[in-house]
Length: 148
Image 1: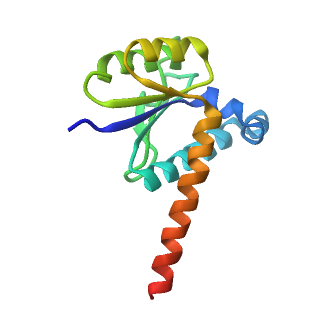
Image 2: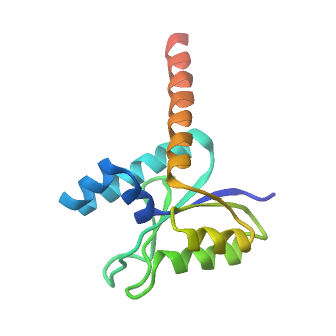
C-alpha cells in the first residue's frame, strides 16, 4: 500500500514566513528547529510522513536523521549539493511507489516534481493545512481531557 509523504523544501518554506525568516537572520539553528517542530506536530496530527530537506550541508552533519523519536526525517545534502537536487532525486525514485507532495515556492522544483509524478503545494497552502491540522488536534485533545 502506498504511503503518503510530504517533501518539504525546508529553507524555501522557512524564508516564506516572515517570523521564521527573521529568526533565521538572528539564529539560523533556532529557525530550523522551530520549523522542524511545526512539521513534527503536523505529521503527528495528520499521519503524513514528513521529510524536510535543508540546503547547506556540511561534512560534520549527518546526511539524514530523524528529528526525534518517531520524528520527521531531516535531510542535509552533502556540501555542494542542493536541497532542490535531493528533492528531485527523491521524487524520481519514489513517485511511482508512494503518494508524494512537494512543498516549495520554487517554480522550477514545482514543475520538475509535477512532471515526475508528485503533487505540489506552495508554502502558504502548507501553513493553511498546518493551522487546520492544529485545530483538529487541539479539539481531539480537548475531547480526551473532558473524558477524564
